[in-house]
Length: 177
Image 1: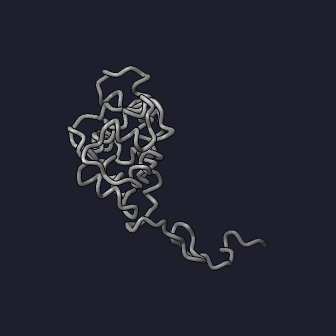
Image 2: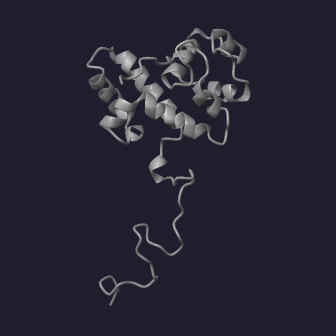
Image 3: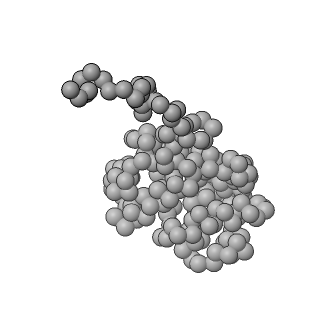
């Protein structure tokens, strides 16, 4: 699988578009007119259709897929989007299992390598920015510290962060004389 070549020139409305999708009924076909009805008529926002196709939210003809319908359930939307990001960027995750934690510059460099240099720096920057924005929306950033149920584990009181108990007493080597 290759890297998705769809990208956005602006990421400021990405989250808002996904929220608008959740608030609306799934259309029979996701088109430019659907985006406009959600309140996004800017030509740059039309590129979101190709982004949704790369995430497998839409098929090649723009018909919403099962993933799109699963995304509408707000209790699982972050996980559904995260799965879409992992599928769309499978090559990037093969290079670095924690690709979501890489800096934009590192993502851009890995994408340059994976695409064998066929994109300009500007396009690579936008592709990397899109990946980072989608990873953030999908909850992939910081995910390594989360439990399977999506919650961040809490340390128990009195425990050292590396699992050693803290008794409150100084060890003989650090006790003052």
